[in-house]
Image (cartoon, rainbow, N blue to C red; front, side, top):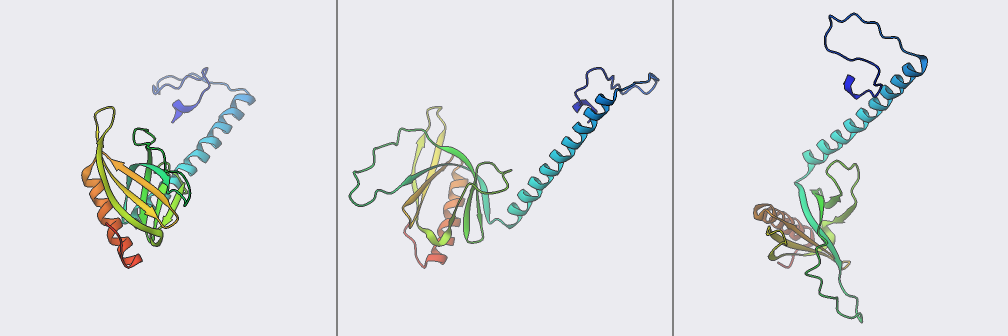
Length: 182
């Protein structure tokens, strides 16, 4: 921890045989105190994030990183959407299925979700064709359609992960909606 301090004149050596005295000016002492306070605040923030992650993961039915892109369904009278299958706008998101809601976090360490959807708002969960990225990596995909017309396209390089999400979402949404299209 002593290596975190930025005062270059202070010799922090693990050798206890050295009996040199270090004299600090009042400004240097105040700087060290300020750095200690900053580190304690950062530690408290990291502990809060860790506790939040722990609580989320303990109560979540399923969680993990997925690549996601969102699309809106065309409204009546709108021209058909442009074919954007070649657009690589997949963004990694930490997705959590917890209670009656699906939460999307930017990172697993975030304290609050970036987006959320009630399971009762999901009208369709379907598997999408797998595809190969430009780097040659195979991606397996599925889609979540909400009653508001929002379409979450989700993908992962793990077929097992996609199958787990499909199974969990299809069983959860079928019980909350009465029936679901597959």
